[in-house]
Image (cartoon, rainbow, N blue to C red; front, side, top):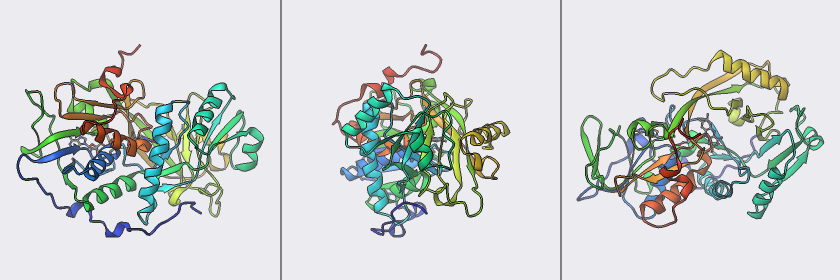
Length: 409
Ligand SMILES: Cc1cc2nc3c(=O)[nH]c(=O)nc-3n(C[C@H](O)[C@H](O)[C@H](O)COP(=O)(O)OP(=O)(O)OC[C@H]3O[C@@H](n4cnc5c(N)ncnc54)[C@H](O)[C@@H]3O)c2cc1C
């Protein structure tokens, strides 16, 4: 059964529904901060700013973690294995504590500590350096040889695998649920949320005074954060443009055989197969939605508004072929569910978080690039610091360090 701990501290039922939230405007110019976009980045930013005493309005065109947002999926992996990148390793580790705290405050789990297993075709000094980095931060981690892997997870075929790295305290974040729960907390604590579709913003001076949307309505604030994920290029065609390119990602959930519990979270960790350039990853059968699997390779360019979201036969055939090799007892099982989501890729995989170059009071945040979700709490803290004029800017996140796609080589 699921490994998650359920805690009944301040249950979710006590929180208001998002539809019934009062919109409180501040007397005078408007809000301290308006955050546009209630995905994981915008939600944590609004939540953090509100806790620091700011009067915050969070808006979204379609609702918090809606089905087509990048944050609207079922599960997202949290892991500290980052190939030795110190910043993301630390951010993921710090964020885990905040996700766990959020999970403890609510009855429905936000985090399932099923563990995260990376498997590699070859051992290397780089793997050991990443392990050392994580151990230096106090992160529990185990290095396993092929025989250990087969003994512990006999339902997997480890042919071609030399080594595995298990992060036993990591696991699966419930993506949509966690963002919607966070937004309800934000509202219960005095923040405001409303549906509002923002037009591409314009200002002639050195600051942005207001945004318009919903057919001509104006909202004023002292400062603005635009956390619009794959829609950022549309809102800021000149500043962001092809610095962020959304790509189509097909995701599959397979039904294990009746009575077969080998793929549940108590017996199967979340996993990433790094033995191939075509990197597959997946999750155990969490909350009985099925065994999730996807290919991490960037799919074709994707318009987040334009297309019906139906997986392709070709992508399904490819994951079945992969299952036949690595999870043979699932290869012929029925497909229980499928989803099409989009990565919002920056050119180099780094987050894009920076002040708008023309407006001193506006920030842009996105570029999660298929790995951003776990960092939501750290992004919220970082952006709140930037907006409030504290903290140190991270050079890797700046617009200057991100080139438009196709102009990098
Ligand atoms: C299939 C898939 C698997 C992934 N797996 C992982 C994983 O395992 N681990 C991990 O850490 N990350 C993972 N990611 C990446 C992660 O989910 C994203 O990086 C993250 O959710 C991006 O959040 P966001 O807030 O930037 O964008 P979004 O969640 O897309 O939110 C942006 C919001 O802005 C709103 N908006 C846009 N334009 C406007 C407008 N004009 N007016 C008002 N509102 C607007 C949208 O409606 C949307 O709700 C995965 C992504 C996908 C697609």
